[in-house]
Length: 175
Ligand SMILES: [Zn+2]
Image (cartoon, rainbow, N blue to C red; front, side, top):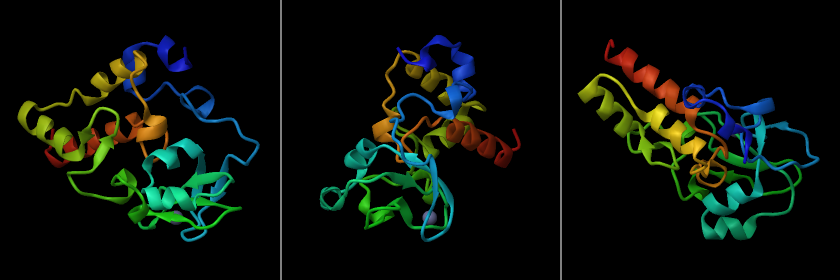
């Protein structure tokens, strides 16, 4: 059982379930925890190889090399994954999914495990005045149903992003 599962569901929903800054399933590797994106210079966190293996197009998976990869979350930068030891860098087009931090459309997933897109969150708030997304996701996280280490391009929990989208939409609608 991982650390997420022992804390109350509303704390998970508020994205307060990161133990030691590393939620759930980040691999322990000797590489530095952060590195700068070679294109945007963005300070970036390391990412599991299995996240890349799951989310890259097959041709890109073939080009993966051994080495520690990092995830660039800069919205203006096309690089998604890079490594300081290995080339090539992988960009948005190399992934099979749209990357939340780099695409603004309503069809883009915020939560990749349970299919909450920006549009689905907006629609729910428009019709009911609130969103149940964080609480629903938190319950599933607690029940160990989430697989964000392989489904979310950033390789970790989506709840921080879900909460910021909910806040943004509510502000837009003056709720
Ligand atoms: Zn970058």
